[in-house]
Image (cartoon, rainbow, N blue to C red; front, side, top):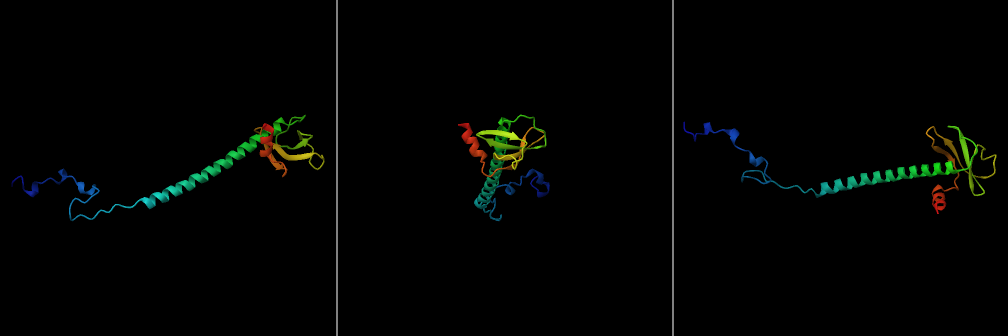
Length: 146
């Protein structure tokens, strides 16, 4: 046998390059047609944009709830009251001649402008139980800062 004999040919030494090239390596190879990915990309972009837009909306709503909770707590802690509130009890906030007062008196029993009823949580935060419809906390905050 000679060295040129096909039996001695080592198949492990040849590289199957044709499987990885983006174009056919012979006339008998299958035609390679590049895919149009614009539809895939546009679907992906619009899906991601929708999801991120929804996340932004949820973040904004959460942010506004935190700001409102902060402002209610600020208003309640700055209100006038002559007692130490008990955790878990209901208290009522009133506007008395332009000053805010925290009281144990029910809104039906005291004829002042009732703003809301609140409960003190164990962590020291005031939780709104019921708020007057004619009191806008966001309007109050913008006018009280000036």
